[in-house]
Amino acid sequence: MDQQLCHPECIASSSPDISYQRGVRYTYRYSTTIATTLQGSTSGRNGLALDCVVDIDAISKCHLMMQIRNPQIKRLSPQKEHSVQRLKSLRESLERSRLKFSLQGGKVTALCPQEGEQLWTLNIKRALLSMIQTSRTTEKQEVVKETDLYGTCTSKYERRGPLLVKTRNLRQCQQDRLAYFWSHSTRLREDTTVDSKLQCTQRHGTTVMEEVNCTEIISMVPLSGSTGVVKTQTVSTLTLLRAQKGTPSGVDTLGLGVLTDLQFVEEGAEGKARGRTSSPQEATDTVRKLCGLTSDQQQLSELFLLLAFQLRALSLPQLKTLWHDASFKCRNDWQPLLDGLPACGSEECIVLLTDLIRDEEIEQERAHSFLTTIALIPHPSPHIIGSVNALLKTPEVRTKALLTGSSLVHLLCQRRESPCSLIPQVQSFIQALKDTLGEGCGGEKPELLYALKAVGNAGLAASALIPQLNLCMQSHSTPLELRLTAIQAFRRIPCNADAGGGWSTPGESLLTDNTLRLSRLAFDTARVRRVFLPSCSSGDHRHHLTQG
Image (cartoon, rainbow, N blue to C red; front, side, top):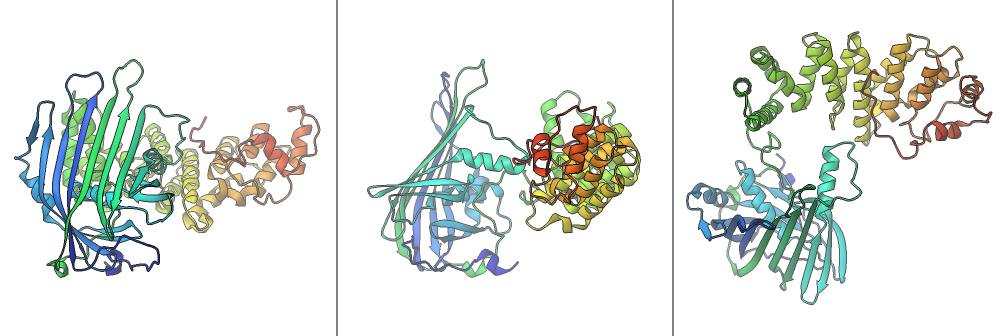
């Protein structure tokens, strides 16, 4: 790994900034308490408390290193606090690894955890470092977008005498993360079920942060018919104990580390993030365990989720080996590995699944169901689109593959800055649509209908097919259903796209058609699209996925 990745260049700035001096060790006390209570309950609060000493050493102008010492973990109950003596290994894990990080402009811009750092210990350090992020503005108020443990969203800084009060819009953080996970999520007009707040009070010294107090409150209102509000409150403090001269030892022995940021990473969310690999044998064992379960639905769900993560960590050759060894059915005729492939969602899993469909190892009805699932993948790759293109040569699933492929093309093009029309797999798919449409929709009606719906799904990538759409609308021999579907195929093509001429003629011909019996109007491109496509200017996130 390039050393500069974990040691970015320090950017010079004339603005006032927090400055940790090289050759000085800053020792803080960090305490955090997490407690959950249920309104109306007499059982009191339950939670955990962590108390430790934190050393921060400046390695250079903006590169620092932190070390946790003497961590104490306690379990909170309504009666008293219990020291968690048996969790000695947890305390040792917190102390084991030093963490290098970069602090520039009051923001933690990079973390460089050492190889072997456990994810849960890194998340605790992320929470601690999020507290020292601050504003260097001299203004009374500042609103800025920043990234910390909660994600990327706005922070408001307000000066109140010697203190700087920071509030975070945690709901915005949550919405942005959901928007990334779901490609077509719709924001709720009002969400009153969960309320989350974070406020920190910071006190700056002459050079460094001297004290931070943060309170985070998350309240959840139960569904209608339930009583009581569940509230989780996290209170954290970071206090400077001393600053004394000293040279940190062992800096040169630290590895380069792996570049990451402050955002919380969920344990088990990603195979790579968990720092572990999977093997076909482990996945086979999980499949056998799934077949052995009959009544425990919770354990069944947990094992199936584990299988999905195990599959995500396997290469395509490993998946093919696994399919050969573990594609058996359980006694109840369930085939866990087959259902696990779309749940896995990785490029390798989808390629194997499409290969199985192409080789007719999956019955047609299930193949159609899986293709619908594939169409909903939030982040398709060109290779996945290429694997779906191969199914266009299989008559049994061709029409379904047209709809699936077009949805994936649209999603891929939405997320790319460069023109997606230059991607070979996209070019091949659009060419297949062009060949199907032919000259003026003169082929078989059912397949033409699916092809036109696919053009509507594909959106911007299908702009090159505007001449074919015009021919479909213009021909009086084309069935009315196809002519109207051709108009609807423009629903995702930008309104300013070159229509290639010919709109007025099909528009007028449709108006004079006795079946429609509409008043005669002189239609131009914009008018036709405004009448038939009211969503033109705002975009259309719907996919045609069914063959009905």
